Image (cartoon, rainbow, N blue to C red; front, side):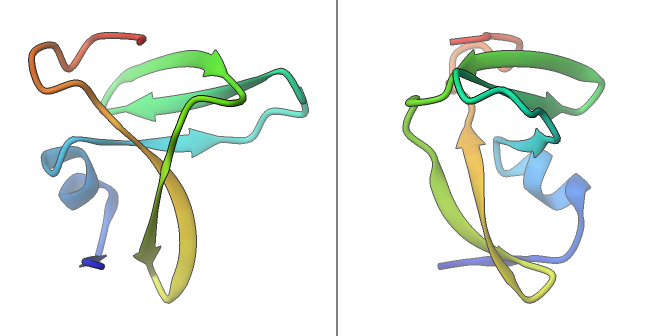
Length: 68
């Protein structure tokens, strides 16, 4: 499990960062300057970031702007 130091490293590795959202049906994500939502049950990866195990969305390799 890789440890990333900042959001730029996460974005460069192809991950979106979860944004605060009170919904129990969808999740809101940020990848660079794009914000999008996915259903809550979309698979995520747990990654160590700033000393905390957190959930991140791996972006599709063929299109980083995809909203899945």
